[in-house]
Amino acid sequence: MNINRKIEQAVGFDHYLHDFEKQLEQKNGKDKILNYIYLNVKRMKRISKQYEPAPYLVKLILKINQPVTWLAITEGWCGDAAHLLPILDSLSRLSFKPKLKVLLRDEHPELMDEYLTNGSRSIPKILAFDEDDQLISQWGPRPNSAQKMVESFMNGVSEYANYQELTEAVQKWYHYDRYLTFESEIIEFIEPQILSKSYVNVR
Image 1 (cartoon, one colour):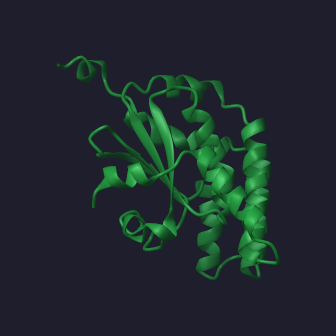
Image 2 (cartoon, rainbow, N blue to C red):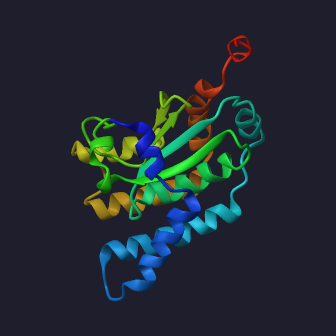
């Protein structure tokens, strides 16, 4: 698979948001998927305005000393992505080294199938590639606590009666967690992107 080609096809976060806003303007009527997209666009805009990264995370981002592409595989209806992409966008704007790009899962199934979660096309999936299109690190589809909620439900040992109850519970978890868990987990995603000084100085 040509990763460079996939990165070229990906769009920035602002473009991603704009595309879905345009889609919402053009399509009227009751549509469950569009309703999810509408809620997610509002959520992403709000988070983008309100989110302030933890100081330790700012320092870590500024230590990234190589050009890196953060490639997010997602869909507009994905509730987890609506919480997490604005944070990744805010972090990427702290430095010119990491660039956040977004691809839609259903338009790129062959890429998604390279990065499954327990055999599932779970999203969002965040991949970090270096200048040579080599995978450095990956993260996803959601913080561990939220992932355990989903896995328990899928395994039939959940307190939630149906998928709707589960998704509402996960959204509440994001609200009360205030992204602290995601910030702590994203450290393991970022650290491999920091080259040692000895390696950086090699010519």
